[in-house]
Length: 333
Image (cartoon, rainbow, N blue to C red; front, side, top):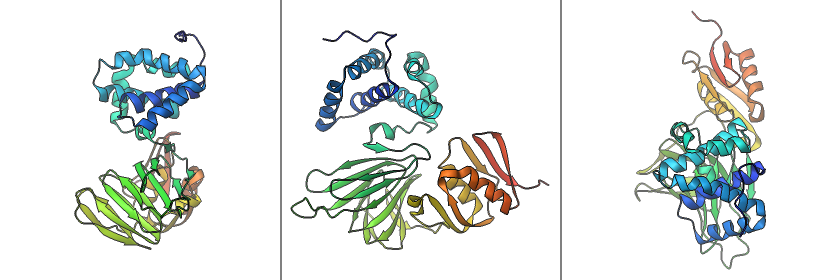
């Protein structure tokens, strides 16, 4: 048996991150057999993994005395703080102390700690995009601040969207004896792809489904009000049904190419979209929110997009800090 890791021993940041994520998956979720098997493989792969697990475990014993939601919030908040503030290993372990629980439980309550990333198979941070190529030939592109899980075992293929937005181009599933149905699950219901390319985006209380090719059949969680979304259409999927989604002035799925392609889009809506790709707060004054905007705006440089808007519209950018920006009228009064 290996000796417990000492407080002063150096552990790589990535190893500590992994130990925290495994704790969330195993201690505060009902782990599937394959998850437990993957954890055992990770644990045995490197002595440093066991050291990190033991170190996190020394704190998990105290977590057991607390409500599980509060304990989980602390672990989730550590991950969020590490990602947003760049906190190092020593700071991460400090944040795991019981003295930090109240502070970071409050942090997660404000929805700034995306816990979904910790229990997903793949995820992205704010401003990041990622492309997954699955064994069945399906391509899944994750947009900013998104999280998904994939299950290709059995008689159906399933993608679970935990957070954010994805584009899916379903694969031919050539290795299977017969092409298996392809499903996407969201908190508000599920959908079956009928040989297609489509975008799914989670919103407050519903999901927006936009189809570029083929069709998607919607199945609300209540079992009522299903619908088929065809190429060129968008619909909202909610617990109790579905309805046509209003146009919002930009091309669905253009983010896959790294841009927002706007056509007579409200400035307020454009600012809200750009805010998804930036850390901090980006707001728009109601007095200029209805200004129409057209153009192509690159998501990898939102600062450049903001300055372009300030040069072409009667607006002014006000910076309280680098991470707190407001878009308002060029001149008040």
